[in-house]
Amino acid sequence: MDVGDVSIAAQASPRRSVRFGALAVVALAAFSGGCGDSPPDGTEPLEGADLVAGTSLFRHGLLAVPRGGGLAELRAIEDPLRVRWRGERELPASVEAHAIGRSVVLRTEGGEISLYEPATETLRTLDTVSAAARWIASGDGGAFVAPERALVIRAGASRVVTTDGRFVWVAPASSDRVVALVETGSGHRLDVWEEPETPATSAPVDSPGPVVLTGAGGEVLLPEGDDGRLVERSLPDLAATERLTLDRRPSLLATSPSEHRLFAAMGGDARLITIDRYAWERLERSRTEGSVRDIRPSVTGDLLLYADETGVWTLDPEESSRTEIESEWRGDLPVALPGGRVLGIRAGETRLFEADGEPGDVVPDVADAWWLPIRWRPRAIEVLVRAADTVARDSAAGEVGERPAVFQEVGLTTMGQVSGRAVAAAPPERPGATWEDASREGDTDAGERVPNGFYAVATSSRQLPSLRDLQRSLESAGYPTQVLPRVDEANETWYRLLVGPYDSRDRAEAAATQLRRERGISAWIQEVLSGVAAPGGR
Image 1: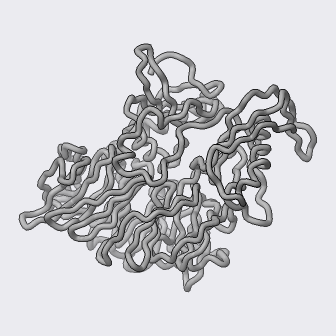
Image 2: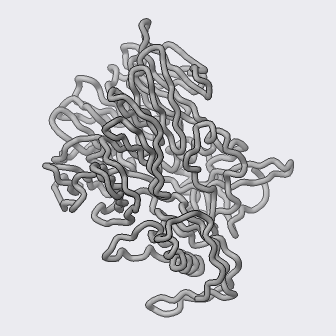
Image 3: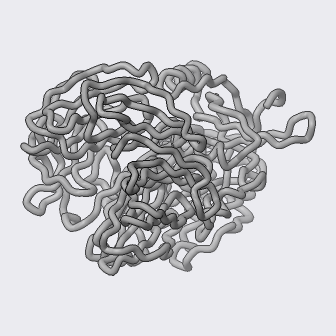
């Protein structure tokens, strides 16, 4: 294959630059050869920009971050024994590590908070927090919360909020808001910040918590009163809607990644309740061996991990069946894997546990690491390839085929996909962007092309930042997404949030049905050809 003009549209280290010629060949071969299969795993792990996952779209991975400092590794979430990528940047020793979307938050012993972006191998310091600050995860972000100060972090941005009371719970919400439950001398209240330093909205609530974000960050849910009423309050106005009454106040609340399921643990009572968050009805009441002290839904949403007074357990919410796992419980482990397996830690060894709870293989060499499920389809490098008039792809079986080639734009990723058809949706988030920068993202933050195929259109909006909130929520639930800009008859720019691509209309319609069932989203079907949607409509 003759590849002509290759130019790199992003900065990279000299060590990585020498690899781009081969990468361009791989990318262009994938373009000419159709879908194909992922390249087989070699005996050595792929490093840096060499990691190209063929034309398969892997949505999540497990990032192993050495607790004592060193190089991060990305492991296959379906098989943590397989290394997909190894970083080149030396990370500092950390006493905490937390995943938020495609990034990792690190806390050093001195309280310094940094944000690590594996795709670009960037590490930037955000702030310093006190020893009293505790991490509260929520949606695609979280906060280090001290009594009167909270450092709130979401992808690409952070900010500090303060209170005249005592913070009980703080979280980043949609549209770049921050919401908090505050304890005061006269009771509890919910505060909502927009951009100003002081809350834009406040409302008294009869509740010390627990609190969870719902509705893609558009509402908060908490028990109010002493009778177990679950009340959902909209943001930013905090208007209350009573959703369901339990027989007592829950001590813990958690949602599945899709937010379709709500899990409630009853304080002092050995049971877990599974709730359909859209129909607002109780689905299951599962007995536990003791009072539940922590809940951790799986990335795929089909398994629940919890710790009670007797040990660590997995629970299938559909079957109400539980299995004991002989693992310690800490901030990152155990973590549920696809297929019912669990990655846990016992006696200082990180090991796999089978679906029936039996201990399996020990993961070698990385016992002293944080294990973090992250999304890993960021675009790190973009390469322009001018192809020859005809492109052929060869394989071990011989020539696959030929097709005319034109000037193609091929997106290469260090963690994810080389598109097999068209390319380049929105560019990556800018390193160092502030909270205000993120809220002012404009029309130029969306690309002009998306991969060909059939899509379920989740929404259409002229406001790109609010559409990004829904995109992050859908991606955290495992949906593949793209953003497609369109100019209407009035020369106004609209943005479509596409779920896909799928290789047939039937598969896109199945995704639309799932969106309607799990998220309450009425999606319609659209086909994209040559990277551009057919004209018509918004």
